[in-house]
Length: 246
Image (cartoon, rainbow, N blue to C red):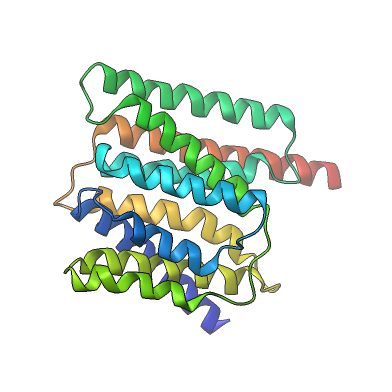
């Protein structure tokens, strides 16, 4: 249990590092730094793997054109999707959650079109769809028992060109994935669910509390609403399940 807890906190710290690297680089993360971790752990066969790779590439290409806070905040969809499509949920819950997400993201897009928030509305929609597809693909494959360590060789050109921040980002992602894989197979505690809640929340919170990073109010409000929606949905579903057992 102690080692598992340590892995959990390490994964949380690495999520903070990823968020700060994206912020400090202005979203200028080389595509190879995003693909190296993907090639390290992803199964190469299957439709879900293809969707995952495509979604990661699309998300990575939009990073330089969006506010960092917005690019990081969209990952809060992970716990919301996890709850909305859990075994306790049903189609009405998923539909209501989808309507809330569309409404809130549409508000961000309208604010961007009005010139009150930097970034492009089309990229906001693309990032939202990319994260949804990433969640879907990760929920439709089984973790690989082995990894392709040769993928780390792709980071050497980044190191030689003095892009150490990109190497740090890639290694942090690999560390997060490794911790998630190890903790998810444990039966003593539902670490996977806890990580799904914690990592996106902590990553965005690290940007909020940083004195050198300005998080626009619309982004913070939308993120808070999405997090609140996920919490409320999870609470309602748990309560309904408890009442049915009684």
